[in-house]
Each structure stands twice: as structure tokens, then as C-alpha cells.
Length: 185
Image 1 (tube, rainbow, N blue to C red):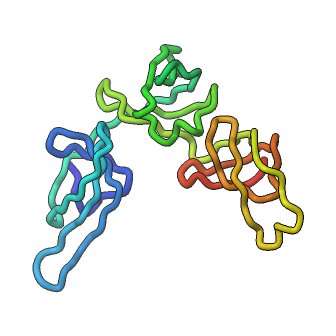
Image 2: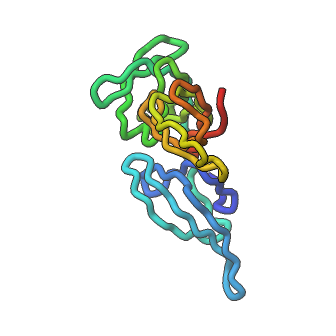
Image 3: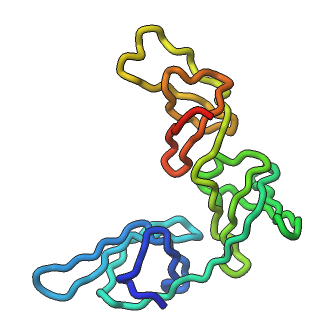
């Protein structure tokens, strides 16, 4: 059990028989009455988002999650095949469990799979990935004074805005949390 005063973004809770990830939380201390914690929770299985208010100091159950390091091997239909790095067992993970991270998955990339018991909750991909630019329009001469950007398609299919000097074939580092260009490699 954990106090709602100790909530953090990304924490997984067990509420009403379901698993919920904390998306946002805010401690509110009104001038009159008792303090409370207003939260925005996302269901780990369905993706539904709800707002829930707790009294300050109320206890909630923290979910016990197991994190296992695995390697992404290949895509098979709508599933992504992962291999356990210790036992070499293969496991299929559906694209809806991966979420937006699908657009950054590159073959032989190491990821962390989150389990609750035997159920797969989701995967954690690295915060930064290095990918090759496969398609981007050429820079326009004289259009670089303001440091603008142009769209670039990466080898995994993700589209990221990059500076004008980035060309096709360049390997860049991308922040997977914000989908932003960081630098050239």
C-alpha cells in the first residue's frame, strides 16, 4: 500500500481490480476543508483515461510489476517477436501493448517488457534511439536564416522534424518520449 501523497507520474496502481498508470497528479489544499489529490489515471489494459480524486493520506495498492530485458527480433503480422536475453525464449507482443513505441522499434534493439503476473502490460523502449534518415526533401537555398525544420522519414517509418542541414542517409538521435530530433551521430 502507498499513500496518495507519494504518487509519481508513471506509477502503476491496482484500483477496483484493474491496473492504472498515473498520468498526472496534483495536490490541492483548499482554504476551507481537507486537502485532496486529484489524479488522471490511464488503464493499462484498455487505455481508457479517467480522473479520480483521493482524500489526502488515503492508501492505494501499488501494483507489483516485473521488468524483463528482451531483444526485438522481427515483426510477424500485427505482433512483434521478442527474445528473452537469459533463456532465449521467444514471445509475441501485440502492437497495441507497445503503443507509440512501435515507430522506433529496430531489429535487434533491446527493450524492457513489463509483466504483471503472466500478463504483458507494455514495453519500455530506450529514451534515445539512433536511426537513419531514409527520405527528406533537400534544403532550400536561402531558407536557413531562421533555423527552420523539415520533415524526415526514418528507417522505422517514424516522421521527425529535423534541421535543414540533415540529408538522406544521415544517422540521427531521436528522443522517443517527445518525438524530437536531438543531434547527428
